[in-house]
Length: 308
Image (cartoon, rainbow, N blue to C red; front, side, top):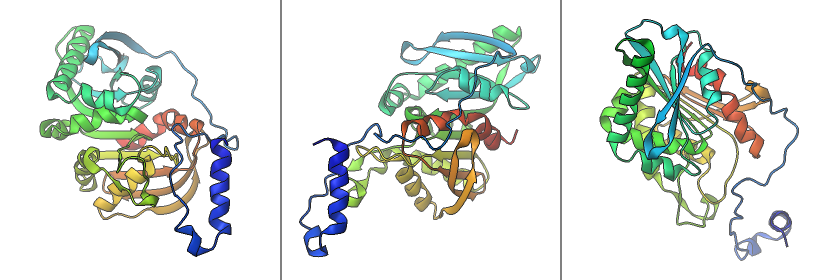
């Protein structure tokens, strides 16, 4: 019996069996990472790659991976430059998203592979992020022909890329130096115990979420900027972005407000929470295209985060 049929039968039994029998029916979750859903109602519009006005270079970064760097022409002769460090996803997209802003920052993009663990491990040593910033300063200064320093520092992570950000935030001086964070459908953790979901009595392993909670509190008080977006995708094998966002909101004593409005690229927004400069936006969808929508919404989300 395939997974889809088994799931359908389980749902049917839940409605047909009397309550006394429900307790005898196993509630083992069906693994669905990635989501097996197929959805074709929403358009799932995609950005088209454009040429950018500025310089693009690359250099060796963490774990020996290449860092793609974009230096907007508008940086010019300034002595300081704003920096956006983006983790996970095609490099052209965060570059193009940043270039669309009224005051575009320098953009550094790093891709380390699949799974948040590889990103977390790469930045467990705080010196790795220090080295990354130093390399960016070196490359930008060389491109400009004069010394320059980092001004406002923004971190962005799509999907697995959040692993790097949570590792970076564990270092207090890095948490203090980051001005803004954008998480796009990427804030996960594990269930305790494994192989169970919340509905079956599991709890959330908050170890990987506490750094985000600390940053969210600072943003809620207005000292930082933090924008979290998520879909409704339910991985089954680990905590969903919806469940992680719910925990984050509960830790701050905040509640979602239901909304129904169009978002970028044909997305449909279902909920919103705003406190100070901390915002959580929930969007419809439990399919792979809904996940990719989040990355292609980056121009609008980045503009909302930075107020540009």
